[in-house]
Image (cartoon, rainbow, N blue to C red; front, top):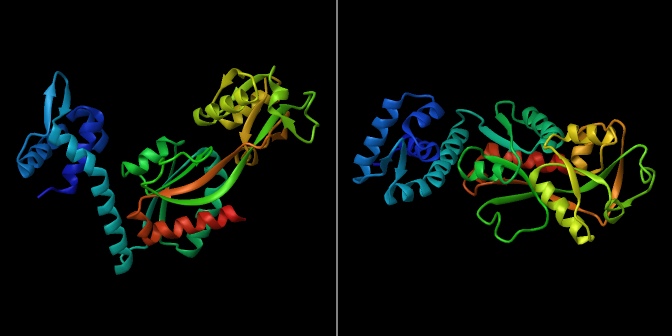
Length: 296
């Protein structure tokens, strides 16, 4: 019989490449990892790992088992949470992953409302940008991923439950002394000769695509995932930027002027979860509160 704890250890060994690294990640000893892998191989009746130098390599059987492990573990988590909620043992636990501007705008109100309605529900929060946040969800390391995308990508989230939250427009940021700072809106093409300050990798790619559609390649002098840093650089007169409206709302720009950009550049903000997890009461309640907060 395959045990869930053995699958978690196998997945950790696969991800880290060694027993010692897997032990550090799992918070146990290397001999314990080795013993559990021997027990798992005995259960399935075949070799799952081969040592190559200092690293462990999966056999074909090991690769097949790891491929199924995330779905199995997610299903077990969903079963445990749903049974516990029905039995009244605990209200539930939700592991939430969000991108930074979502963490500072959508998440606080949603979690405050959730706590008021379900005080026994525990929610943890870590930050990650998509696609990493979506990978964490698929790997079974979170229950809900707050994510975004620019334009629908065919098949990108077909295996997930997608809860649309809002459409977030990108806003131009110009130094207060810029010639267009007082304009009611600004065209991307009008900024072709400017020095640019770019944000996260996904936003950066979108910026390059939009600029190229307007007939120029942006000269990106600075790039940072830290939105306050972007605003600080713009406020210091070191360049221009476009940021999601949620990001501009979360940080008061000093020395910078926010100006609508034409044509409109929008990103879709969604909450994602796995089909099994969507039926867990605590996860469903968290999704509902995120949607209510986004609608305000």
